[in-house]
Amino acid sequence: MFRSLAAALLLASPALAQEAPPPPAPAPALTTPPKLIVAIAVDQFSADVFAEYRQHFTGGLARLANGVVFPSGYQSHAATETCPGHSTILTGSRPARTGIIANDWIDLRTPRKDKTIYCAEDESVPGSTSSNYTVSPLHLKVLTLGERMQAATPATRVAAIAGKDRAAVMMSGHKADQVWWWGGKAFVSYAGRMTPEAITRGNAAVTTRIAEAQRPMELPDFCKSRDIAVPIGGGKTVGTGRFERDAGDARRFRASPEFDMAVVGIAADLRAELKLGEGAATDLLIIGASASDYIGHTYGTEGTEMCLQMVNLDRTLGFLFDILDKTGIDYQVVLTADHGGHDLPERLDMHGIPEAARVEAGMGANAMGKKVAAKLGLGERQLLWGGNFGDIYVDPALPAKQRETVLREAIALYRAHPQVAGVYTRAEILATPSPSGPPETWSMLQSARASYYPGRSGDFVVALKPRITPISDPTGGYVATHGSFWDYDRRVPILFWRKGLTGFEQPMSVETVDILPTLAGVIGLPIPAGEIDGRCLDLDAGPGTTCPAR
Image (cartoon, rainbow, N blue to C red; front, side, top):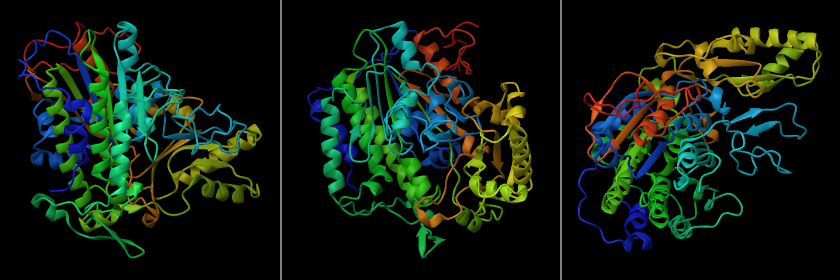
């Protein structure tokens, strides 16, 4: 059995050890609001991965899989990245309303040299850059569930802890009582915040754990069929890892099940210290489990690495729910993901998917802009900014007529590329009404509209063809990714559980923006019409309803 940091944090934490487990509580009356909402986002937990491993879950994910299950949830927008995905989960709004269009975007009018703006950055801080920044919810343009709960009932307390700053910030909003994220060496928060003992103890435990070497984790029998080395070039392979690491290797710690063990363990300890769920009002505990994303990027989604991650995430969440059960608190859980993910093309090719490929080198906006500049005789001037897909920006300093010519030539160049599925201009996107109806029926243009925020989004948006991975060289660190228009990146599970709630499964598609109004219905929180994009999902298996009267 591998050594478990979660066991140490969850079962031997001083704060939790002081609590005598009460006798089992009776099932709550579901007509009354729960005392605690536990909102969990598992980064890069696609609907495909959930379906693949569902039969093997025996812990926390098994409990949730026997609750109210929406296996076909959608991050319905086109920009299926971490920051926009997290911005939808507890706001009820798509990126076109939240303003969080991507993990970062380009502002060519900013006076600073670095024109890239990070989604959770306060760029007004002197010296701020997109890679060295002060964390802030400044760019989030809507209210979160926690903020709405606090406005309705000031006694409500909101706490968040996540493996990424953007996960913690986008789900908690502007006014949470506690917001913590992994800063590279320890869990950190906004400047001037008092540090709870749970964070101090957790950081000490993590520091000790990283200082110790990790032996290879034991591979369950059902993972052994995935134990196949996949060459990625440069003499490197992925697919057979068991998360062994050297002492002091914090980077490998982050891309391993240990990372989620730390986040979830500290979350349980923080709940106990703050006594969330023990007051007069409903409280909110937000957990951002980020390890699956780092593992998916580093190793792909189909090897022993992801299999071990699912085994351990299931077990870690089981520890969390067991501890919450012992408190006797009536708690409501929701679990979903910020986006899905796509496996590396080398393994997909081994599995008979030959159309899976890496994007050709030279597809980046700067390189494409150079081709346009050469054709138009504009010298070495940079004309385009952005990546090799998504939002692309044209130099706003160009004279209007010349800018139109550059835009036209750039769009034609992208549309002619054999790996490009579509290119959509700002005018085309904004002329498209905000989409509605089943998200799997949306056109690519409608998905782009759900992500588009004027003033931040690009002059045009590029969509790569299905199964084209926008990483041309897998030997530099990341081998697989997400971010596309396609359902392997858009589809995520949405799972609800509460003691006494009769479980059922609804296979029809829903959206992550439906989570806020659904939880608002459970706690009786009114949401003004027109302020969000989501709708309430009825969690009652019978003729009753958990949604307000329509």
